Image 1 (cartoon, rainbow, N blue to C red):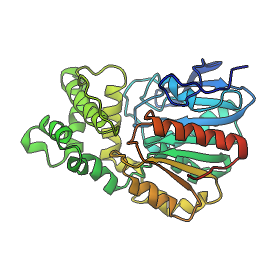
Image 2 (image 1 turned 45 degrees about the vertical axis):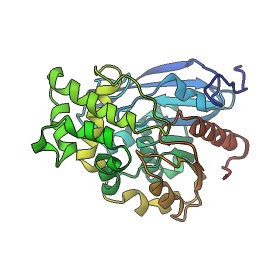
Image 3 (image 1 turned 90 degrees about the vertical axis):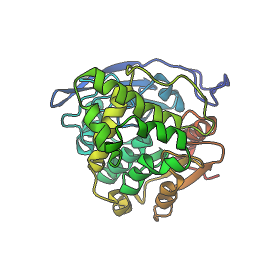
Image 4 (image 1 turned 120 degrees about the vertical axis):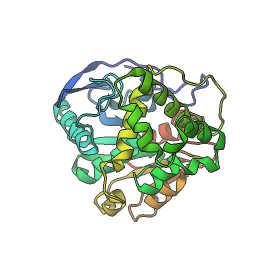
Length: 328
């Protein structure tokens, strides 16, 4: 049995590192195979972790938001992301495909209901999934709410310039002046090119822009120059989803929010989140669902900022202990 106490090594209140007890690849069609893993308690309460991006993939630290004695912790990499194959592939890669993949994974693992945990794009996916399959959800833990509306896409592509003008200007200056009125499509055309000399620098520029705007306390570091790791998948898949309006109708999530009114849910939101501004979290919390909104004063967007990290762990612990969430 794994020790349950959290530890303090500069990583907030994350649980200790653990390894999966089970993992594999799930073929889902169109040539895609998804990496999945399980850790924690095989007989515990199931929780599904939905990563952001699209394209960000999962990391071992994502297991550590959850008490491994209580939870059966399920992670998977979405189409084109992380260890799923083919890497950075956009064929049949839409929101509807990802929702179907989650259901296929649930059925394959024999899960009747699970707690759904997602941040940023993962929160979008969690909300859409819960609205379509509320009968398979125990509740939701959301971070950095993003509902895929035009106003939110415009903020990411243009509005951030009011807060991070230097990062935005570098992002824009990567493109010729004639292509700067439609940033998403201009980047997308480069990111889908097969030639790494074309898609590589575009991916690095997109990734650098997002990373520089993701935390409250910005740490100056060497910019991304290559496009290994998740850089290409993150940039290509985000651009792919952006130019297709996330494959959602405008305001789809809020229009269907009544379907999840009975699900316990909490939002952990950084007050200074510049990627997914707090207005979306507030609108969702005010939508009549009874969602708890916990605002973290000293945080931006990243799940690994100390206040966000502690809030997410506390939310999972609250659900473990009571089956619901506490505000404040």
